[in-house]
Amino acid sequence: MSFPIQKALKLAHSTFSKLSKGILFDLDSLSPLRSQLNQIRAVDVNFEPSVFRRDPTSFDQAPVTYVKLYEDRIISVGIFVMRRGARLPLHDHPGMFGLCKTIHGKMKVNSFSQADLSEDKVRKKKSTLPSNRINLVPVHRKDSVVLSEEDECCVLTPEEGNYHEISPVGDMAAFLDILAPPYDYMTMTRTCQYYTLLEDKDKFLEDSDKLNESSPVQWLCEIPEPNDFWCDTSDYTGPPLNVL
Image 1: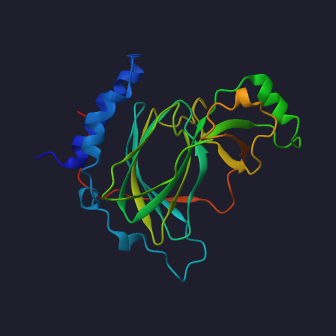
Image 2: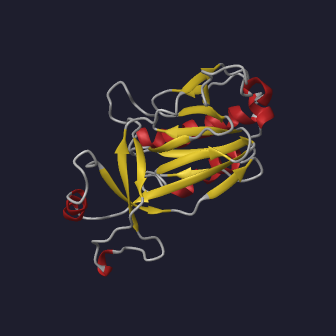
Image 3: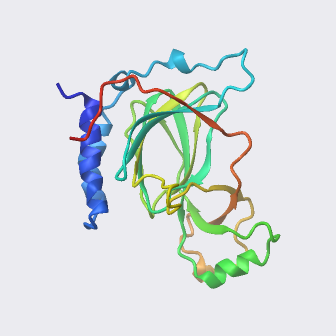
């Protein structure tokens, strides 16, 4: 018997194996995987919310828990559990694809896509800021979305929605997360960086440089990992998984 999560894992692995082989890849290739992932529910991964409820007597409980399902050089698959008031801070996915499917509660996703600005304009912006705010990324804000388990998965690509922040709406929320390729801290080729949104809109760009008037250029500034965010882990207890 093939469980829904096993089908999704095998399909994700075969789909993203193309990337490691240098095969041209487009979003249409994700349609079967998205369709399979949209069917996943909490019961398919044996997710039990009561196991992850915040302990009111604990002062050092992590705001976020990660449940690892599978990882190799092609993909990583896991579940992020965000307790009430927690968040996954604004972060990036360098050169990566990602699919997020809510399996419990509701979550809000704020995402940004990098804007195509010249290095000269980026340097000009840097010159207006303090010296400790020099790692800047020009971006366009995408529409925020609130997703429940009844909604389809959200997708990020190396070009679209590659910077995002995710937070629960109301109580605890959990989502299944697929990244391809995974973060790589062995060679440091793909590491997660955190950002803050500079509140000032871009004042120095000329009208001809405002690439999308409905979504003006904004700026993300790289910051250290926020102090209010840390993540612990929990064991996966769902159906056995393999990609063979």
